[in-house]
Length: 106
Image 1: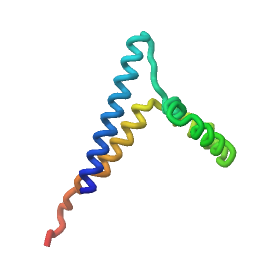
Image 2 (image 1 turned 60 degrees about the horizontal axis):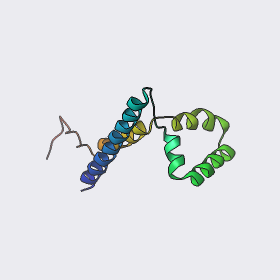
Image 3 (image 1 turned 135 degrees about the vertical axis):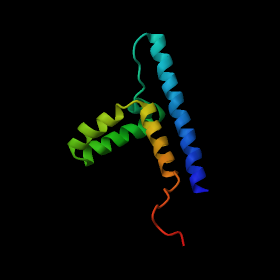
Image 4 (image 1 turned 90 degrees about the horizontal axis):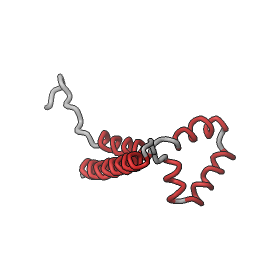
């Protein structure tokens, strides 16, 4: 039952990632240049106050290397890539266990 739920939510998340990819492609075609919706833009548009508070908290409490090199680059990733990776992770978690070859099934 858990495997079914993981696959179902993974499929929904992958469908969302595909829709985000199609939206970016449509915007790029209409603008005649590459337009990519970044994760940071999407997070800031959904919850601007909480996103700003989270950025300030990370800047003050985390080492500068974490914020400057890792978090800034992560927030610049395309939203469809991040969502698709999360959906693929759910599918990977829901995979069938491999049969153990060479072991007795008794």
